[in-house]
Image 1 (cartoon, rainbow, N blue to C red):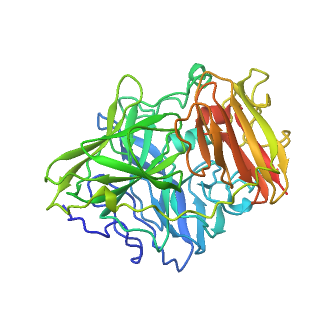
Image 2: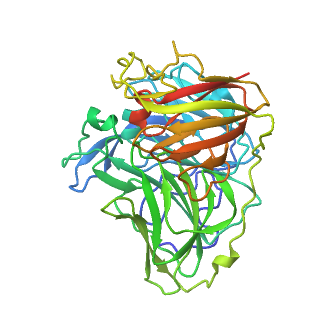
Length: 466
């Protein structure tokens, strides 16, 4: 087993750094020193995921021709141009949405609203400069439930050249798969579940592996970059066998490291934890999902090597991203009501429709994957401040995600602690919140529930910033 050193998995100078060496298998990481656009191909693949050894027909992203049965990690550098060419190797249209990145609207990856469909065999060029450092991810915004449900997702790590280098870094993408015993995929959803909390998968994984084991340096400080890329599952994360602190949530640093007890995360959200590993070699730490009546281990980390004898007091506050501060004294208020609906069937769409409408925003259900004939939920003036008064009048939680901009959570009736600036809020049943933002990015920006069945059955809208 390769011995970890202080810069393992943080080196970006070598082109396409080697595959992850800690036993779970990750696709190759793209170099920061980008001399040509990244060739990012969406393609079918085979992977052994289910417990009985059957092979599953998955979708994956491959980078520069390197295929792996695991999610691909793309590294970028804050303030440095990035370019990628999506090549569609699937048999259906697709796009790439760069989740959480505040980039130009034309690069956002929403078909019909910001870009054309990318048809089979075609390509699309994405070019942008990430303004923020942190943990992000990428996924399609076309036939979303099926394509994401079959594995089409990866992580983005945007590095700040001045940020702290920890003793090791581990990316973890958490998700379920709806697989039968033979490894074949089950139907994407059940309508009765889509009308409630969503349809859960049958196989739970981290980095496409069931309960993977990653040896980490004894006594070291390890940065876990965690993205919840499931289409449905909510997590309540905790660490057993070690102490940990939260340093960033949804890519934005906390004002100071916060000791981890339990943390609720919905689909689409990310968290950066720093774990202080035990001193004794062989002692195992477990990342657990503590939600519900049947907690389970997500991944485990045995300590390896001589103790580095680090301390959580060594963990610094990370540098803040340049998120604009809204002027609350002049902010315009926009009411947003999340509710159930049964007004009409979903409109047909080349990007896929589930055939139902169960959910709505301001009593208007999104008719499919395209905005026509739905007008913007609200129009915003560039540079002006707004307060979104959002109310969840349903008995289910909804992780509401905003594209292209970040907001400040002014209040949330069922949150014990308010997060830093964010692009997603996990609204609990019957919760009310006030979200303040500066409309500083022109274009049409989607906001939606990131439980994909809710998104695809009506709980979607968009803001137009001009």
